[in-house]
Amino acid sequence: MPSLSPHELIVVVNYGSQYDQLILRRIRECNVYAVFVPPTATAKEIRSLGPKGIILSGSPRSVYEPNAPALDPEILDLGVPVLGICYGMHLISYIFGGKVAGSDKAEYGWAMLRLHAAGKESSLFKTLPEKSQVWMSHADSAKTIPCGFHLLASSEDCPNAAIRHDTLPVYGVQFHPEVAHSPTGAALLRNFVRNICGCRGDWQMDSFTDKTIDHLREQIGNERVLCALSGGVDSAVVAALLAKAVGPRLSCVLVDNGLMRQGEVELVASEFTTRFPDIDFRVIDASDRFLDRLSGVADPSEKRKIIGAEFIAVFSREATRIQGVKYLAQGTIYPDVIESGVENSHAATIKLHHNVGGLPRELEFTLIEPLRDLFKDEVRRLGRELGLSAEMIGRHPFPGPGLAVRCLGAIDRRKIDLVRKADAVVLEEITLAGLLRDVSQAFAVLLPVRSVGVMGDAGTYENTIAVRCVKTDDFMTADWYELPYGVMKKISNRIVNEIRGVNRVVYDISSKPPATIEWE
Ligand code: XMP
Image (tube, rainbow, N blue to C red; front, side):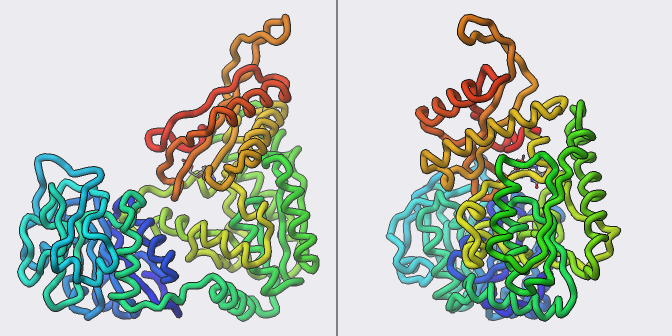
């Protein structure tokens, strides 16, 4: 269970739908703090968190199947407004004696929602048009309206698309207001949290910043805190928070593993030494050590193991050289917490590979994770608030094991160098085209494939670079990005002309799933 929050709170019972994180994000976009609780949460546990509202999420399950995740019915009697979305609506219907059943055909895609008279008057649909497009994704639906409820809206294939209890503040919607494909969905969720739950919107980044800095100051006292910088946004924001909180009692260590993006070490170093001159900032150049150990290694899990072990060795050695460290700060963010299954027993499997580069346990420091409650866009907002540069904050995510996962097959220095240069071309051209923010992640991958080509009059037999650009909200699913041909052309020309050893460039047009973002 989450801990008590000083903010107005919306609790989202997480039944494991693919859209669950979007519910939290949409609520937080209304400046209202929202957290997940597991389906096993009791009414008493939820009441102890003092929520202003409760949302029951969707789920891939059916409410009538054995061991389906349930809802403590007393939650509906807490007097706190409840909104059930898809599976959440089925649970409400089921508990109140309505009939929920599957259809022959699952309904998946756009539907036109039509409000009834009660819907037009309902606070949930206030200011929404009489007809609006919504996104449906379900096999089951409420076949009857449960006792004590009335109908607010229907769609052609789903007569009971939105319901409300006659006296209790309990609502259900069959569609998914949280997804972008429901254009009025954000307004509906805003109506729920602001008008029905009465939240004023006290989740503001500036007050989060001040409160967190005060809290860190109090927690760390006169002790020393150590922070490992990776070059990524999350660790940079943690370090900036700590720099503001405890200044000279912060030591930052950046391990240069020789696998970072072009200019990354220099960027982080100049950012921190100029903006926070009173902190103890150290760059450890361990690139030879990493690249020697990785030379000739082709197996991706072996690469990760080596990088993880080397990182621990280098970082631990440096950490023991710094006197009096009591705390270790880490850039864990809310999706990491969710994905590790700590908050939600129904979450997908742990992405262990993302934890390579995780910090050494044997160092026996007390862990501090000030970004544990934040989503990536909130971390970026916080970073801006703390004065980090747009270049630092706007960086695309980059895997802990760095370019090693983007150099397929046996690694050597030349190949790492080659993929680094190609990556820099991709990022430069995307930046020049003004697309850096619209593309969620862009990079180059060196494939272990050589093919014939011609350059001048000579034949070549050289490497292939794959360019990958994706658009995603949460990095769990992603679409390949429709890069304009002109940008593709520039990238391709520059790569083959500027980088010796490459004669062919391909563009990756695979979505996730079934592909992943990285190639490995
Ligand atoms: P995949 O490849 O799983 O990637 O679709 C999803 C997101 O995670 C990043 N990623 C990693 N991040 N360590 C990290 O810190 C890793 O080992 C790792 N592997 C993938 C990937 O870049 C994408 O943003």
